[in-house]
Image 1: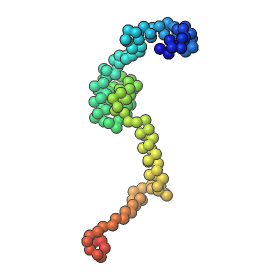
Image 2 (image 1 turned 60 degrees about the horizontal axis):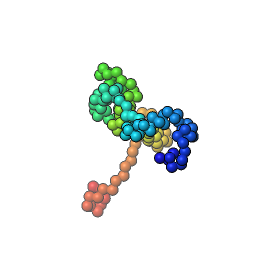
Image 3 (image 1 turned 180 degrees about the vertical axis):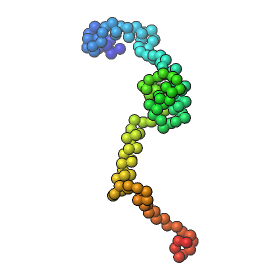
Image 4 (image 1 turned 90 degrees about the vertical axis):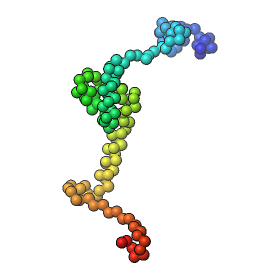
Length: 141
């Protein structure tokens, strides 16, 4: 459409965008026939292991793709880690990329709250103050 409006020949258009003319013509033929230029491609590995991957992901939502991959392999199905990761991403069953990083930062902040790092039991005491109203004027009781 843009090529025609600009009055540019097909050969010049293809040279400008570094596309082989044969490829351009093939894309145009597919577009005229109403077919998509690319995909969707078959996914036999994902489809074959889909049931096991989904089962483990539902049973253990905090597991990552490597643990689920190991369990699928243990169940006797040969599949790659990348296939498991793609399946989980497609289904929305994977935690965000930054999840572990955020957890580690929270742990660092908790540790930084202590002036001296506790080395054993009963070394960290927490004081909590609450105002308890009992209805008596004499205070708590």
